[in-house]
Each structure stands twice: as structure tokens, then as C-alpha cells.
Length: 289
Image 1 (cartoon, rainbow, N blue to C red):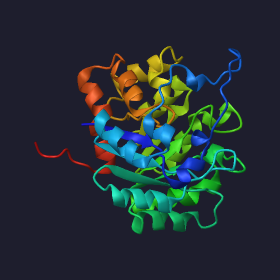
Image 2 (cartoon, rainbow, N blue to C red; image 1 turned 90 degrees about the vertical axis):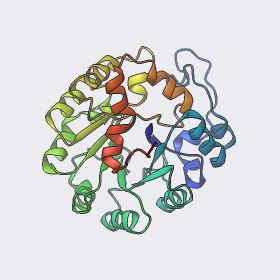
Image 3 (cartoon, rainbow, N blue to C red; image 1 turned 180 degrees about the horizontal axis):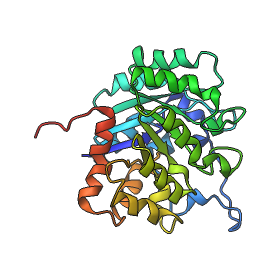
């Protein structure tokens, strides 16, 4: 059983976000795109085809995928939560929705409620570093979102890495630690796991028992600095609070899973990352048989 805890599928408003924009290939070995190293494109990405994508989920053995919403500034793009709602209604056994919420939106708390109560999402997603203007994760402008999520008892994904924000200081784990201390009963999933602050992120997970790390490609890219910290934590104290995701379309579903399965994570711990930890957050049970 496998839960892919972050995908952004080729569907409607998703096609306008950064990851789907056409970017010219860079041949200069000094200035090339680091995410292009060894990348295999998937047919669903190339053809922008949601039906192909769902077939790829099946072919890869992904049982459940979490659609991660995004409300960001114009440089990165935003996704309509109604599009997420449409997909989870169309594929209720396969897809789970986390609605994207903009902390600068005066109606952010209302959008959290609407997304959960009307659209059927099971959690929310925020990227404060990509807000316009950017915010740190513990900025008080984000707190109405955290407070509403805490009231509803739903999980929150905060994406935090050197890529999210005007500089890598925005990814420092202490910002999320302060939020996790303020909402000890709320589950926080840290997308990108605060890379490059890998050791500090593992310390965040050790200290805050309501925090799950989701390192994604910062864990499974070959030769990635800091990856061994995440692997070590997955084999020990974070084996019950770490999650797998492909981060599609940054990597294709099959390539991401192949790379993850090649990591030296002990089988009993790997099963928790692939299924049990995510199922606990989403309140899912493995199907009988």
C-alpha cells in the first residue's frame, strides 16, 4: 500500500503554476536547471492529460494521492480549490484534497471552512514564503489559517525549503517550531522538510511530536547533501512521522518511487513512510484482503 502525499496533477488551473510552464532548456553547465538532472518525463505531464495521470497512479502502484493546493504570488501561480474539489469528487477512492490558502486573503479562514465543509478537502496547504509579499511561517498574518484548522481538527501542510521564499532563511525550522508549539494538537506536515536545514529539521521533528517531515526529492535525489540525515531519522526516531511523496510533476511518479525505494531505509520503517504514517493523518484504513 502506498500513499503519495503530494501531487499537483495536469488539470485546469494547475497547468498555470510554475511547474507546468514551458521553460527553455539551458545547455550551459554552470546555469542549467538542477531539477533536470536525470529527469524522466511522464506522458501525462507531456500531454497535460489527467486521465493519463490517473492511469500512471495505477501503473505505479499508488493507492492514494494527496492533491496539494497552492495559493502563491504571480511568479509561482495559484490553483483553484474548486478544481481540487472537482477532482476528488471524480476520483474519490484515489485522490484526497488539501486546499491551498493565501494568508493575505482577508477571507482565508472562510476559505478553509468552505474547502473542508463544502468541497470535501481533508487538510490545507500554505506556502508563506511564496506569498505576495513573502511571510515567515510564524507570521501573525498566517495565524487565522492555523487557528481555523485547529478548530476544525484538520492537518496543515507547510512547504519550507530554500526554494520557498526570497532567501533560505525563510526555511529555518524554528519558524515552524514556534507554530507547532502554539498549536500542539494540530498535525503539521513539512513539505521539502526545511532543506537545506536537514539536521535542524530532524531536530524539529524530534522536539515537536505533532510535526511530520516530508523531504521529497531532497531525500531521494542521488548525492543530495543532507539526504542521509533524513534517511537516518527515518530509520530511527522519525520512522512514525515521516511521509513519502513524489512531488509530481517535479519528478514522474515511477521515477520518484524507484529512487525512494533505492534508499537504505529498513523495510519495516519504509512501510510506515509509504502507507501507515499518511493513513494515520488521513484516517484511512487499508482495504480488506
